[in-house]
Image: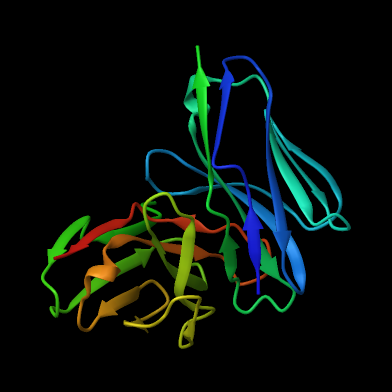
Length: 112
Length: 114
């Protein structure tokens, strides 16, 4: 089977840095994606890692360690608008038509 | 470009009723997906279509059917709605079904089954 674990809630203050972790158990792991969702609206793509290491996109970075079955999303210079749910999602080596398995999400609250 | 559109936005059904959720994308994407999201949960894949003319089951296909009408449209049908199908339904599309390909989501349909 496949499973992902991420913290249910994280709180941080404006301007700070926060890290959201994701551990996974899956056979045939291929890549890890991150999505953001505001107030139950449409999820939006943030990043994707297939290789070990750090991918940086503006204030957001994502990291993957395949040997540790672990990844994280790093948000810097937090802003109030970053308050949202963040989901990690794994994809399978056999792809199976682009199927993603999502974690249950981490709700990030940014305080003034 | 409208991106991914879904109709209706809200729907209330009685147990046993049927309905079809509509989804269309104008990005010329090959792959399309239907997910459901229950409160406080992640998205679970119901069905997907890797390309026009093909469909396949996801994690939770029971109680649903799909039709890839053409490249743009992918509909989800509930033949006999049950309270357990109360959820928010999201349609998504991606350029192709390659791994890591960004998926674009519609605004969702909020379905309540009484």
